[in-house]
Amino acid sequence: MSMIPELQTQRLLLRPLELADAEQVQPLFAQWEIVKYLNAIVPWPYPDDGVFHYYRDVALPAMERGEEWTWTLRLREAPHQIIGAISLGCREDNNRGFWIGLPWQGQGLMSEAVFAANDFWFEVLGFSKLRVPKAVANVSSSRISAKTGMRLVSFEEHEFVSGRLQAEIWEMTVEEWREHKRLYRP
Image (cartoon, rainbow, N blue to C red; front, side, top):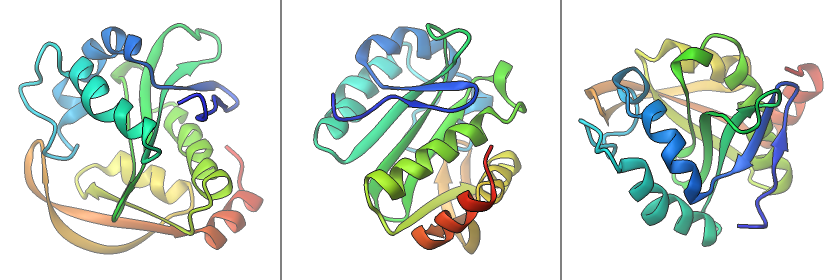
């Protein structure tokens, strides 16, 4: 995991996930407004030790195998406080996921994190395409995809924590990414 670098944006530090982060993340993550549009593999009600077990048993082993890259999000002005997370993964048709705590939503912070993660995906890891599904009802997440240069390519039905919903599939190629970042910086 030492191969996963810390990333920075204008306002954020993206630090590689550590097991010690679980205690701080648990109360932020285990909220209906955070999890309702996540993949149905996330249990609800969320267990009191759910973040610890997920980090220990799923996320950290995937990071060690080089199949996932996960960072906690922290404000540069408060580097000890976790405010969210972003993850990249080698899953077919689902290469990025994120969440941010309720007090920090609507401030453009996740767009900054997505910009940094997308750049890592394409320019460091060398992937040629990024795809992400999201619930149609998750309008804020769709706006982030559009703002960061992705395009809507299809609709499907997916299982989310809140049930079976219509999902959008967003996509971007490395060429599209390079053109987007040439024109736009968060």
